[in-house]
Image 1 (cartoon, rainbow, N blue to C red):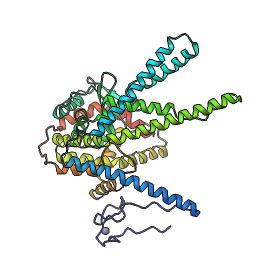
Image 2: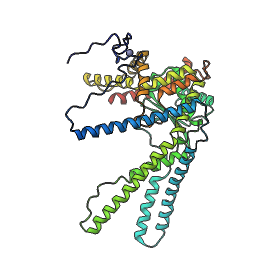
Image 3: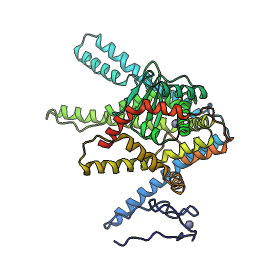
Length: 437
Ligand SMILES: [Zn+2]
Ligand SMILES: [Zn+2]
């Protein structure tokens, strides 16, 4: 296969192109080659298959346009300063969530009523109902496989920074910090005691600058005060219960439990009921998602504004842009994993080496490549409804607000070093796990 020479000028607008040869070539002027078109599927399609493929493509394009339009509308509303708290859609979502909770209560009450009755077949039904109610009970999400909580006594410097940032955004101090291996961070409330849990992805933390770390913490604590209904208990527990209903009612092919026509009929009937409930649950989940997307995205923009207020506008923007560098981190990990396999070394990964490599590679991503990823986030937006608004709109909105040049919280070198020392054993363990693949 002939290797294509890297063009020096844009084939479309003849603008001179430069950029790191280690990254895809594209034109910032006219966005030539921004989207690398997927290769056409090989093989001949019958006319009927062609029509079907064209229809599917049109549907996808329509859905993407709709998602993009929704995101852009929310952006216009938030940028225009329209108040979000009187969102009638959220009220409807809250009412629907109430129905979900009512259903759980009815299942529980009904099961108890059946259990205290005399007829044993009904008692069995009651026991099954109790089991279902148990599955549906309000409960926190499950932690990730490699997640590890780190306590206040173990990481006083990290908690001191977290507390300062939380105080700056007006959030209560966090109850527990959890370290994960993901290129991500999140804040949530968990359990009936509603404990605040901050999850910090260590790869993200490692490649972030001190100011970006502060901005990231401020954004996450912003979720404690930005009135995001989706993260509240009422809606959050309802969504979780609905996911359980969905899981419980996925119709499975019943193995014939007998060949008597009554049993076969009962099997079909059960499948039909499951199918109906499953469809209704899926519809309800979609509806709740649609109803809360506006308030959820508006809440994200508010959290970004808090990040800018606490860490400064520039730090907040560069933090958001750096969230698009996950693939760079992943490629460093891949390369190191392969090298370990080739060297047949045991997996005593050198944590310090991995850290240096990650920091260096992320810092080496040139501005034109960062810009490409940002523009790509605008173009490819819309394959799914996401909880966060598209990154390019988040960066733009932070830029449109009054510039903050005096950060409220600064992470000094000394404090940074103390935190690094606290996190060192965790990074060592996690890099071992990451390199094992
Ligand atoms: Zn061009
Ligand atoms: Zn967020």
